[in-house]
Length: 199
Image (cartoon, rainbow, N blue to C red; front, top):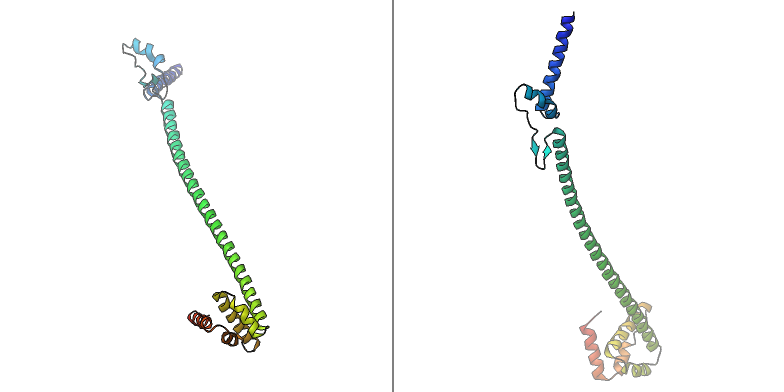
């Protein structure tokens, strides 16, 4: 019985020592300083710990740490690249927003200009219509005296408005009467211009 116990203890000791040697060889543990006296007793040169740059001992933990640092560096570089892409896209988006705002301002200005022109045209049309109604209500000779002092384009607009009002109301237009009472040369010129630019 004692022989078996001693044999098992010896086997355990051999396994432990062999495991220490093996794990030291694989650099899982650092047993160089612990095993140096054993090497010397056996007459062998003790193994020195392999060193890396900076006198850092070679070990799995150090390798894992270096791998982790490399992975972190790669991740940081990737994040920097993404950040630069995001910054570039933000600049592009800001430029697009500025362009859209400029176009919107331009469209608003155009819309305001068109509204102002439409309001002016509507006011002018109302004024022309009012003048045509005033002139139609006067004796033809008095109306022709007033028409003689108006610019040609305004005379043409008043004549056309007078004809339109007469058509809408089913009445006779006084334009032919006014033309007959006007200076023949000017009447001919106005008729020619009205024919050249019909409604």
